Length: 601
Ligand code: PEP
Ligand code: MG
View 1 (cartoon, rainbow, N blue to C red):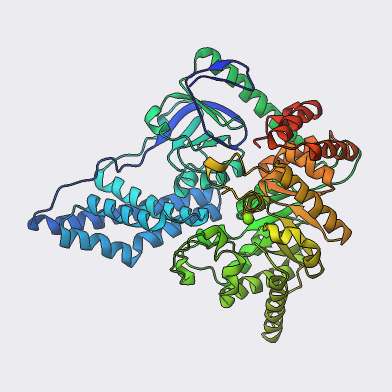
View 2: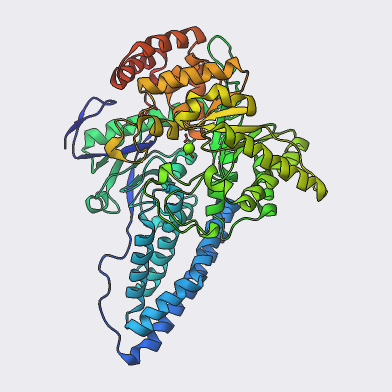
């Protein structure tokens, strides 16, 4: 396919177009991470070979365990304890009784080789989990795959490519970057990430954004097209990947990369400057985080607090359900990493279509996104739910002593009744803590506004919530009836759609009329075009991936409130998403041409 770059204006070929998941440009040497199950072993064991095969499996298991320990130590030293925790999860999977029982059973009863038994185990778990549409749970399946791949490598003596032997900055190319692969890269000079699968919310995308690495996802078959050592270009703004670029294309992109890095470094200098518009109206630029490391990055990028802590990740990188004390410790660590800030902790937001093992949830649903997920699931697990609430209330006391404040946010609120019920549950948790003489402090209680019914009737709900945070990722998918992870309907799932802009204008106006604080914490808050429109609607609090904060701060300093209002006024008259996008592209080119390159709406 031949394509004209929007940025360089030159024809580029061959190129692949995918989903832009983390902005920036990088040119480097490909480092392909292949899975090793290309040809499953079909050999059947002789009776006399079974014992030796079991021993080979045990030996591979021990070596895998040694690997995991070594990686844990390395990553703990180079990156941090939280990232290293994933290896404890993998150790637990490796030692899982069912896992071992199945492999041994297939070797002994079916005479499969250990490699073939592992292949069968992988298929077993994959078919169990592929039906899920819950991205976080999909990542957990990746953990199982990760362990199986590592074990198989030891059985077949397949050696991992040695990154030290490769020249220059690396571009990682993988099917889906597995969690341990991502952290095991440690301090390797990774400049870009390309994946065959994945979406805006996949693990690779989250890691890339939190580290400020350009990334493109959803390029099917790229691993067949690239070999380790090839030169490769990643353009995370246009979602383009170019393999073996021509000398002209390569130098055009190297120039863009230098400009991008220069621009990013220049913006980083603004880290300690207050976020405000050109007419000096102060803004709150908060960070969306998944854990302590993100909180540290966010503070370093100039965020003034945490607008959304997605606690799901804490559960999924923990070998068992984290108990109240473990959660409390984790929240306190986030407080320590976010001096003098407000930290918004969202209760567990998972569920829907599949097994959540520790919640004993074992049934399939026809429409998981419209089903038993999020707060709906929490209500039916009161013990589990109140453990999290108690940990947050206790951490709130700690936060206050450190000059910070914690807010508690509840996902996927649909009705007023749910808010009453939450208040009652929180009150009960407080009473119990008081009775047990455990120290705690009150927290403001907020709702995620991501269901259209709640958005339309927001005036009736506001009297019982202390703050609102708009989850635009879900709100847009529900409003437009277009799955946020399905590329076939991505033309509909658009935050700049006229219906979305009208609804948000109304919601923000209503919150102001009730003097209820409102933040937008969906991806659109960090997208330059949407940011200007939200500013025009009166929004003053924005929460985004930390990597977007410097660009948004710079853009804010170039726009006045009057300009943003007049841009919004015009945009609201436009009847199609395409017209809104076109109009906003022109506006950004006028206001801040650099920021336009960071927009992927
Ligand atoms: C959202 O829906 O916009 C949001 C911030 O929550 P999540 O992406 O975790 O669903
Ligand atoms: Mg959501």
